[in-house]
Image 1: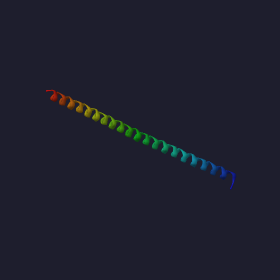
Image 2: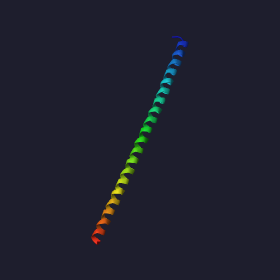
Image 3: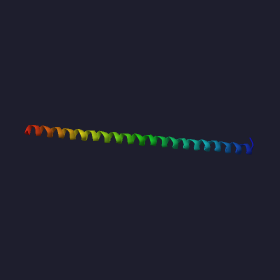
Image 4: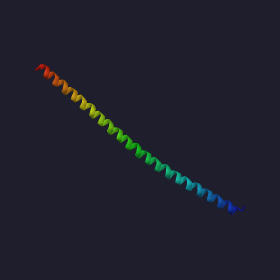
Length: 77
């Protein structure tokens, strides 16, 4: 192998490796963005579900308090 062939192979290998690294970084960044979006959406859904559950519990407490008040007024009458 001549000196020029060795240089050509080295340049080709460097170019191939650097191209592969760029593709891998791009894919990693795309997957990270996709997973972050999915995580944020799931977190938002969970927060909404917790708010709904809290509203239901508060409504049940108000209903129970109202029913107890009605019972007291019936008993007083």
